[in-house]
Image (tube, rainbow, N blue to C red; front, side, top):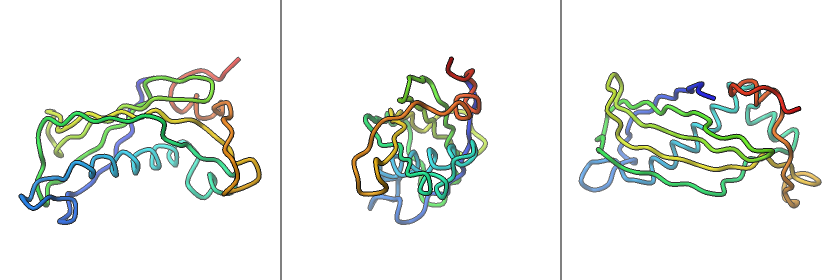
Length: 143
């Protein structure tokens, strides 16, 4: 499971603290955007997720910060799936300045593949990860 998904972001003024460096919640917003892009690239864009009453709630997250980009810096978020369970999965994120290989930060998330029982607003129930996602992430379909 080593496929890497990439997402570009530019540090906007609103992403910065008063000192002009990235405000740490920005990394968490970028992780959330990256999982949305990763799912879309694998055939599950937001429209399909909504139409099929699917969701991927977050159950754990963290981020370690090494260096700080500043306003206007172009960054890249690299995402990969590092663990697959029956319905849960773990993602790793690495953040870089464009064209550089020294990470700015490293993050992780654990999520669960779920369906709303009777549409949005009703209870969520975990579901087995679809074989098409497993294949897109680099693992053979479940037996």
